[in-house]
Length: 403
Image (cartoon, rainbow, N blue to C red; front, side):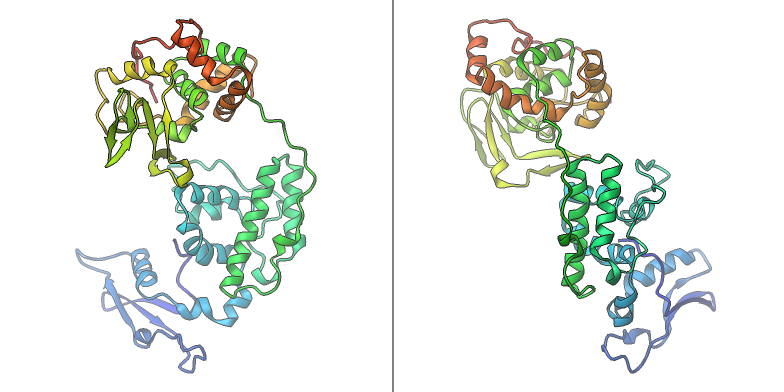
């Protein structure tokens, strides 16, 4: 992860046309952690000529090749280190960086409620010139960044919880904030930067009301599908009829779709007839393995979906084994968030369903199964029943999605 700068006991200087590094060290260091390579100046690179490097580049070389172990393990530093410094130097590189992309994204978002958002973006290497920050620092917010790690008490965590509650954050978001603070101090205790009970574990969640989870009824599903088009219509149908989430749907590649009546094979793994093998997901611009083994499933393709998928498989391009089932004009995977913002939200407003979202649509799989039975949908399709929910047509979409 990015360093804030050279430690105070390091001198970067220019001499005879070269960048050099000298570390002021105590020869009687009690921890025995002094880097003896730096008892004499270290040569980092030329400062002049065609191969010259800038001072910033010299600092980077120094930080990568001559880490100051003394600085980050000395009792004096452990005594004075702030929450922001610990998050940057220890928590993110040693804990967050070990998570999958989804976990890193979660910590990136929630940490902005614990320390100032601009500090979090810097730690996560966000290019502010290319990416406009969605969350900015809130005046009078009880950020923990400048508080010494050893001085954080349960009251500090309670202030965060109270501020989030007063701002109208959901129960789940407030819980995430407390849990992230707890994770920071669990790691701090493990690394012996903090002694005592975890301050987050001593803070109870306030009694917040939980909003009722919405889900589409059959009538609402028919109304929504009646005004949808590619790709949200097809994605909605798959979500309702199979229960797959949007990351899984966007990550479907043709190699894992078996539209035939016989077994097929993908990467040495058999796929049953008329099934989708859920092994990958498209999340935050990356194709990743579906994490938990319990989510590795072969989803049967219901009869209503078969003509739709057959039609998509017969389009003029993007039907190779590694191509995605749902693609833009350029052949890139569909971004579920873009579709939600550009298509779902306007549809929801037009139909007086401002709560319409991918989560709501996916819940319809459970509610409709309970309301009419998923087998009943198959029977209606097999008997030629024509309905917006199941009559998907056999022709591929006239136009690709414009991202």
